[in-house]
Amino acid sequence: MMHKKKYLGEWVKRQRLSHKKNTLSSDRTEQLNSIGFVWDLCDHSWNEKFNQLCAFKAQNGHCNVSRNDEYKSLGIWVNKHRVLYKKNALSSERIEQLNSTGFNWDPLEHA
Image (cartoon, rainbow, N blue to C red; front, side, top):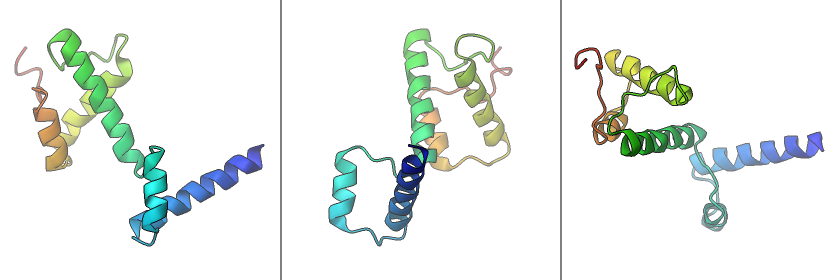
């Protein structure tokens, strides 16, 4: 069973690489899109956390997620993005997305 997973993982890796290089056929791309294939794991992971943040805000009315409660993982993610922002290491697209939620870049300033 383990070697089947390895081969599947290698196949997935090749599909992503071919897609990135624009050498994957449009038919294959459409087939993979139709099953919800994830082309970029980093984007997928970021979008999942962003959606969790949006849900948190809808429930709590703010984006100041504590790292010490039931949302620990999300709180760590929020803090990481504040640090990246301060270091100018966050893309303008990500900044815009976070700003759209009313994201508080410096919670101590508004405490």
